Length: 298
Image (cartoon, rainbow, N blue to C red; front, side, top):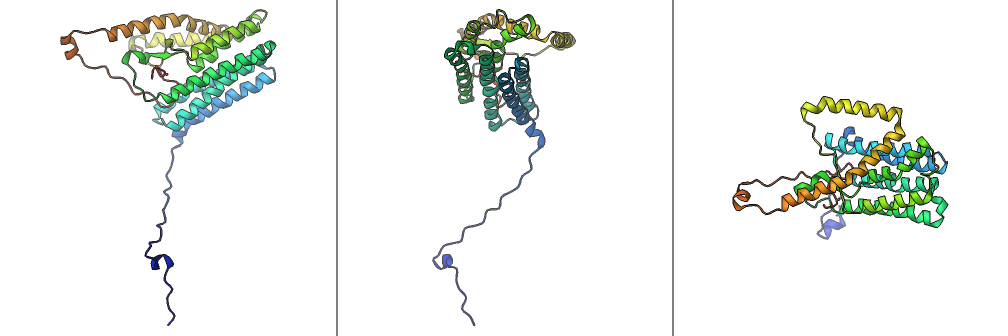
């Protein structure tokens, strides 16, 4: 009878390692929609750079606008489908940097800043760097809790709004000519100023938490229809007007923010303080661009 050979590991008193069985889990296609929109926004930003290199500046600006629309949709889809994830948040920030930091800087460099030589490239780099710093600060402060009055505000100009502000001169040039607004010095000042606003602590208005009373739903829809009509018939003047209105809203946002802050931090009587309930702060969204107040958390 042949002698059975014993396993050397068993002979040494060791147990063989157990084989791990990997489970194959299904993944809903709906949960991929926000990330697909984010990738499409990134592709739109890359396309804007390509059109700028070819000298097709209107197409480049349209690509940046498309990226902004997609950036606004991905976060809302993520919340609607309950598909928030840290992966999506990081992907969204990378897409925002390319579409609203690198792409506008390169488009403006080819459009006018190149006439300043090395200084024009420094201005473009400064804008892209400020956008990257803003997004990096946003990612590192996601878990910081905000005071209740800060949730209706951004801290500084968000990246998509910053991209829109620096190309206002292009909106004007496409409609009325570029005799003045294509000046490299004028655009250098605008780009540097907007870049500084992006990394500043200036509170700016946020429309993400605006609620419309049911009595005003129909007028709001009519206003949206009028806005769409103007946007389709005279897009460049309408976009320039939106940018100027946003700039004009910043002083009012600052005044409103500090008024709410003074009210919140004002000392209260002991009886009122004991009977009052603490204000609940909503949890910050994980994906979908920059959350209101995300730098005082945003």
